[in-house]
View 1 (cartoon, rainbow, N blue to C red):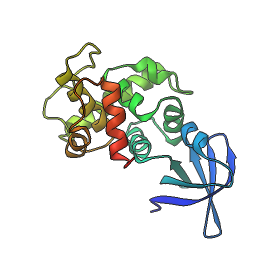
View 2: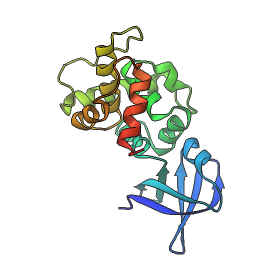
View 3: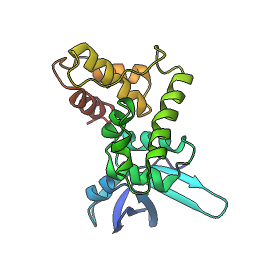
View 4: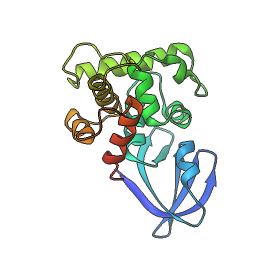
Length: 199
Protein backbone atom coordinates (compact mmCIF):
# COMPACT_ATOMS: atom_id res chain seq x y z
CA UNK A 1 0.00 0.00 0.00
CA UNK A 2 1.34 3.44 -0.94
CA UNK A 3 0.76 5.71 2.06
CA UNK A 4 2.15 8.93 0.64
CA UNK A 5 4.13 10.46 -2.23
CA UNK A 6 6.73 13.18 -1.92
CA UNK A 7 8.05 14.49 -5.21
CA UNK A 8 7.87 17.03 -8.01
CA UNK A 9 4.62 18.04 -9.71
CA UNK A 10 5.05 17.31 -13.43
CA UNK A 11 1.46 17.56 -14.70
CA UNK A 12 -1.82 19.14 -13.55
CA UNK A 13 -5.39 18.70 -14.75
CA UNK A 14 -8.79 19.16 -13.17
CA UNK A 15 -8.82 16.67 -10.28
CA UNK A 16 -5.49 15.16 -11.35
CA UNK A 17 -1.92 15.65 -10.12
CA UNK A 18 1.09 13.77 -11.48
CA UNK A 19 3.91 13.49 -8.94
CA UNK A 20 7.34 12.24 -10.04
CA UNK A 21 9.21 10.22 -7.42
CA UNK A 22 12.57 8.57 -8.25
CA UNK A 23 11.88 8.80 -11.98
CA UNK A 24 8.35 7.37 -11.79
CA UNK A 25 5.31 9.60 -12.42
CA UNK A 26 2.31 8.74 -10.26
CA UNK A 27 -1.06 9.99 -11.53
CA UNK A 28 -3.25 10.83 -8.56
CA UNK A 29 -6.93 11.65 -8.78
CA UNK A 30 -7.28 14.55 -6.35
CA UNK A 31 -9.67 17.06 -4.85
CA UNK A 32 -9.85 20.60 -6.19
CA UNK A 33 -8.22 21.77 -2.93
CA UNK A 34 -5.19 19.53 -3.48
CA UNK A 35 -4.93 20.58 -7.15
CA UNK A 36 -5.12 24.28 -6.21
CA UNK A 37 -2.18 23.84 -3.82
CA UNK A 38 -0.03 22.04 -6.39
CA UNK A 39 2.47 24.09 -8.40
CA UNK A 40 4.15 22.81 -11.57
CA UNK A 41 7.82 22.01 -11.01
CA UNK A 42 7.60 22.29 -7.22
CA UNK A 43 7.73 19.62 -4.53
CA UNK A 44 4.49 18.31 -3.02
CA UNK A 45 3.48 15.69 -0.50
CA UNK A 46 0.24 13.80 -1.06
CA UNK A 47 -1.39 11.25 1.23
CA UNK A 48 -2.65 8.46 -0.98
CA UNK A 49 -5.31 5.79 -1.31
CA UNK A 50 -4.99 2.95 -3.82
CA UNK A 51 -8.35 1.78 -5.17
CA UNK A 52 -8.20 -1.60 -6.94
CA UNK A 53 -11.03 -2.86 -9.11
CA UNK A 54 -11.25 -5.81 -11.48
CA UNK A 55 -10.58 -3.60 -14.49
CA UNK A 56 -8.35 -0.88 -13.03
CA UNK A 57 -6.13 0.37 -10.23
CA UNK A 58 -6.40 4.07 -9.40
CA UNK A 59 -4.32 6.16 -7.04
CA UNK A 60 -5.97 9.03 -5.18
CA UNK A 61 -3.96 11.86 -3.62
CA UNK A 62 -4.90 14.21 -0.79
CA UNK A 63 -3.34 17.37 0.61
CA UNK A 64 -3.57 16.24 4.23
CA UNK A 65 -4.64 13.34 6.43
CA UNK A 66 -8.04 14.84 7.22
CA UNK A 67 -8.94 14.75 3.50
CA UNK A 68 -7.73 11.14 3.28
CA UNK A 69 -9.68 10.11 6.39
CA UNK A 70 -12.79 11.83 5.08
CA UNK A 71 -12.42 10.05 1.71
CA UNK A 72 -12.16 6.65 3.44
CA UNK A 73 -15.23 7.40 5.56
CA UNK A 74 -17.20 8.32 2.43
CA UNK A 75 -16.18 5.09 0.68
CA UNK A 76 -17.66 3.13 3.59
CA UNK A 77 -21.12 4.43 2.62
CA UNK A 78 -23.09 2.20 0.24
CA UNK A 79 -23.53 3.87 -3.12
CA UNK A 80 -20.53 6.17 -2.73
CA UNK A 81 -17.61 5.43 -5.03
CA UNK A 82 -14.27 7.22 -5.39
CA UNK A 83 -15.56 9.71 -8.00
CA UNK A 84 -18.48 10.80 -5.80
CA UNK A 85 -16.21 11.04 -2.76
CA UNK A 86 -13.76 13.24 -4.68
CA UNK A 87 -16.65 15.42 -5.91
CA UNK A 88 -17.90 15.94 -2.34
CA UNK A 89 -14.43 16.78 -1.02
CA UNK A 90 -13.86 19.12 -3.95
CA UNK A 91 -16.95 21.08 -2.90
CA UNK A 92 -16.61 20.81 0.88
CA UNK A 93 -13.45 21.00 2.95
CA UNK A 94 -13.14 18.16 5.50
CA UNK A 95 -14.23 20.35 8.40
CA UNK A 96 -17.26 21.60 6.41
CA UNK A 97 -18.21 18.02 5.55
CA UNK A 98 -17.89 16.92 9.18
CA UNK A 99 -20.08 19.79 10.36
CA UNK A 100 -22.66 18.97 7.66
CA UNK A 101 -22.85 15.34 8.87
CA UNK A 102 -23.08 16.27 12.55
CA UNK A 103 -25.72 18.92 11.84
CA UNK A 104 -27.81 16.79 9.41
CA UNK A 105 -27.17 19.35 6.66
CA UNK A 106 -27.87 17.24 3.57
CA UNK A 107 -28.29 20.37 1.42
CA UNK A 108 -24.61 21.24 1.85
CA UNK A 109 -23.62 17.77 0.59
CA UNK A 110 -25.98 17.91 -2.42
CA UNK A 111 -23.99 20.86 -3.78
CA UNK A 112 -21.40 18.34 -4.95
CA UNK A 113 -21.74 17.16 -8.55
CA UNK A 114 -23.59 13.86 -8.85
CA UNK A 115 -24.96 13.86 -5.30
CA UNK A 116 -28.73 13.86 -4.95
CA UNK A 117 -30.85 14.41 -1.86
CA UNK A 118 -31.33 10.69 -1.13
CA UNK A 119 -27.61 9.94 -1.35
CA UNK A 120 -26.75 12.92 0.87
CA UNK A 121 -29.23 11.72 3.50
CA UNK A 122 -27.82 8.18 3.29
CA UNK A 123 -24.28 9.50 3.79
CA UNK A 124 -25.33 11.31 6.97
CA UNK A 125 -27.35 8.37 8.28
CA UNK A 126 -24.75 5.68 7.56
CA UNK A 127 -21.79 7.63 8.92
CA UNK A 128 -23.62 8.37 12.16
CA UNK A 129 -24.70 4.73 12.49
CA UNK A 130 -21.19 3.51 11.71
CA UNK A 131 -19.67 5.72 14.38
CA UNK A 132 -22.23 4.58 16.94
CA UNK A 133 -21.60 0.89 16.16
CA UNK A 134 -17.85 1.42 16.35
CA UNK A 135 -18.32 2.81 19.83
CA UNK A 136 -16.83 6.15 18.85
CA UNK A 137 -19.46 8.03 20.83
CA UNK A 138 -20.35 7.56 24.47
CA UNK A 139 -23.92 8.74 23.93
CA UNK A 140 -26.47 7.00 21.73
CA UNK A 141 -27.27 10.17 19.82
CA UNK A 142 -24.91 12.52 18.02
CA UNK A 143 -25.83 16.04 19.12
CA UNK A 144 -26.98 18.58 16.57
CA UNK A 145 -24.86 21.65 16.02
CA UNK A 146 -26.28 24.69 17.75
CA UNK A 147 -24.48 27.81 16.58
CA UNK A 148 -25.62 29.65 19.71
CA UNK A 149 -24.29 26.84 21.90
CA UNK A 150 -22.35 27.51 25.04
CA UNK A 151 -18.57 27.20 24.98
CA UNK A 152 -18.60 23.71 26.49
CA UNK A 153 -21.15 22.56 23.89
CA UNK A 154 -18.99 24.06 21.12
CA UNK A 155 -16.03 21.96 22.29
CA UNK A 156 -18.26 18.86 22.40
CA UNK A 157 -19.52 19.51 18.86
CA UNK A 158 -15.99 20.12 17.60
CA UNK A 159 -14.90 16.82 19.18
CA UNK A 160 -17.74 15.04 17.39
CA UNK A 161 -16.87 16.68 14.05
CA UNK A 162 -13.22 15.55 14.30
CA UNK A 163 -14.38 12.01 15.01
CA UNK A 164 -16.63 12.13 11.90
CA UNK A 165 -13.39 12.74 9.98
CA UNK A 166 -11.97 9.45 11.25
CA UNK A 167 -9.88 10.61 14.20
CA UNK A 168 -10.19 8.68 17.46
CA UNK A 169 -11.74 10.18 20.57
CA UNK A 170 -8.33 10.48 22.24
CA UNK A 171 -6.75 12.11 19.16
CA UNK A 172 -9.61 14.61 18.92
CA UNK A 173 -9.48 15.44 22.64
CA UNK A 174 -5.73 15.98 22.50
CA UNK A 175 -6.10 18.24 19.44
CA UNK A 176 -8.68 20.41 21.18
CA UNK A 177 -7.07 20.56 24.61
CA UNK A 178 -6.02 24.02 25.71
CA UNK A 179 -7.92 25.86 22.97
CA UNK A 180 -9.99 28.85 24.01
CA UNK A 181 -13.59 27.94 24.83
CA UNK A 182 -14.61 31.26 23.31
CA UNK A 183 -13.84 29.95 19.81
CA UNK A 184 -16.73 28.92 17.56
CA UNK A 185 -17.27 25.28 16.56
CA UNK A 186 -15.80 25.98 13.11
CA UNK A 187 -12.73 27.66 14.60
CA UNK A 188 -12.20 24.82 17.08
CA UNK A 189 -12.39 22.22 14.30
CA UNK A 190 -10.02 24.24 12.12
CA UNK A 191 -7.45 24.60 14.91
CA UNK A 192 -7.86 20.94 15.86
CA UNK A 193 -7.17 19.86 12.28
CA UNK A 194 -4.07 22.06 12.17
CA UNK A 195 -2.72 20.32 15.27
CA UNK A 196 -3.58 16.87 13.93
CA UNK A 197 -1.76 17.62 10.66
CA UNK A 198 1.27 18.95 12.56
CA UNK A 199 0.94 22.49 11.24
